[in-house]
Image (cartoon, rainbow, N blue to C red; front, side):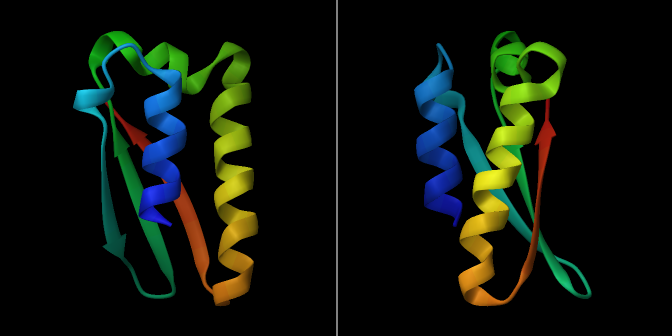
Length: 76
C-alpha cells in the first residue's frame, strides 16, 4: 500500500525525491501520512481536492482486499 501511494505521488509532483510515506497504525485503521515538498502540495491536492479524493479512493479500494480500514493524510 505504501508503494502504491509513493508511485502515484511521485508521478504528480515536480520534486519526486521529496515524497515520503509514513504508516501509522491506530486502533482500527492504518493512516498513511504523505509528505511532499511544500511547493508541490497543491499538485497533490488538486483543484477543490479532486486529486486527493481520487488518491484516497484508490487506496481505500486496494485496502478492501486486506480487510483493513485505511486513510491518507497529506502533510506539508
